[in-house]
Image 1 (cartoon, rainbow, N blue to C red):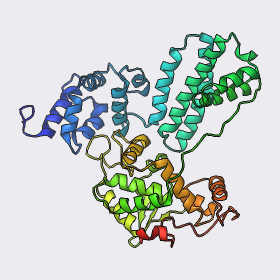
Image 2 (spheres, rainbow, N blue to C red):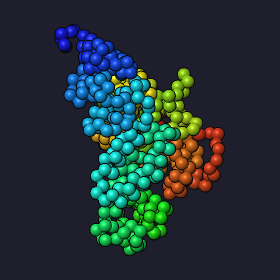
Image 3 (tube, rainbow, N blue to C red):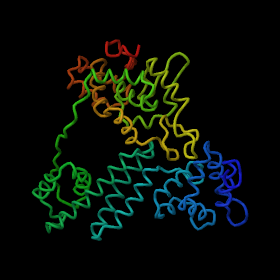
Image 4 (cartoon, helix red, strand yellow):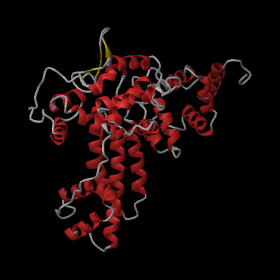
Length: 416
C-alpha cells in the first residue's frame, strides 16, 4: 500500500499534482504535458522513486511556482547538472521545452564552467573566441544535420583542455603565443604526444587567424590492435546466433559489428525504421540502398523489435531508437554498448577491423562503402592493404549493393 492508496499510479498522480501545483490548486498549465508523460509511464514505481528524491522535487516545485523559468538558459545555470539535464530531457520529450541537441547543451554548460575557471583573462578571451568561432559553429552545423553523439562533444572538451594546457605551458616558458617558435612547438608535441594531440585544432586555428606564427604540427601514426582472427570471428558469430543466455541486445550489436563492420557510435544511432521487412525479406539501412539481412539474424531482429529494453519509464515511451537509452529521447551510449560486448569477450574495435578486412575481399570497395555507410576512400585503402582482387574497382554509382553476411563462403555458412 503506497500513500494510503492501493494503486501506484494513483499515488504517483497525487504526488505530481501536489508538486506541480502553481498555487491555485491546479497544475501549472505549461507543465501539463510533463505531468501526463510521467503519470502514464509503464512502471509508475520508477516515477515514484524519482520524484521522492530531494533535487527533482525541488526543481518541479520551482517550475510550478515560477521560481525556475521554463527556458534552456535557466536550466544551464542550475548547480545539480545531472538532475537538471534529466529533467530537461523529459521537458523536451514532452514538448514543454523546444528540442535542442542534448550533447550540444551539455558541452555549452561544460564550456561556461571551463572558461570561468581560466585564471589569465587574455587566455580566457582567446579560448572563448576559439570555442565560438570554431568549435560551437562546427558542433551546431553537425547537430543541424543529425543528433550529435558523445564523441564530437568529448573531442571538443579535450581540445579546450589541451588548448588551455598549451597556453599555460608557454607561460611557464616565458613565451608569448605570437612569439612561439618551431622549437617550442616541437617540444610541446614531443612530450605526451597522445595526450596533447587534441591541441592541434587550437594550434591550427591560431595560425589561421594570426594569433601565432605559421608552424608545422607533426602527426604520428598511432598503433592499432591486431584484428580478431577469422576463426575467432566466425566462432563468435555462431555463438551470438545460438546462445540464448546472452542478452538479445548484445547479440544483435555484436553481429552488426562482426558481420557488417559497424562501429558502436553508428549502431546506437540506428532506428527501428532502419530495419525493413517487406514480408519476405529483411534489410537494414546502414548505407544506401539498405543491405540484406540473413534469415537467422532477421529472426533475432524481429524478436528484439518486439522486446526492446528501456521502454517502461517516462523517458522513452515509443522510442524510435533501435537501442533505447535511459535518458529521454536518447539511444544507449556507445561506451555502454562496448562495455556489454567486452564482458562477453567481444572486442568491438578488433572485431570490426576483422569484419571489414574480410568483406573487402568479397566485394568491390566502393560498393561495400555505399552499402555499409563507409567513405569509399577508407574501404579502398583497406582493400589495397588486404590485397583484395577488387582493389582496382573504380568508385561510382553501382546498382548491385553488396549482400554483407550473405556471401557464399565457408565462413558464412552458419548464417544459411
